[in-house]
Image (cartoon, rainbow, N blue to C red; front, side):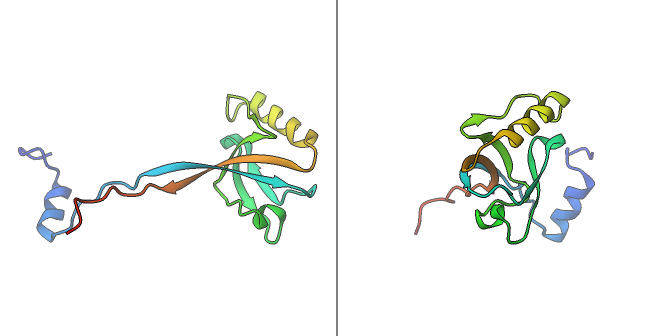
Length: 123
């Protein structure tokens, strides 16, 4: 860090006329989908908190527009237990997945880019 509090990278960026941009912001969007068929067509990563690892091409999850990196948060209106990634969490989710009837509604969270606030009044 230089005397003026700026780093060398900031000085170089300024010299080159490169604007420093803020990191993108994300919001979480919750959505529900109802699975009718037995095979869901998705693979969950329970060690990472029920994150969708993969969606089978042509499968039910793909038709319902579930995407990799969506996070399962509830099954049949019942929130998943706390303790993501723990053995207890993994066992509880696996048990609920085996026991769930069809049709079943599952709730997911998806990260979406946050809208930027308007930059001043329109001219």
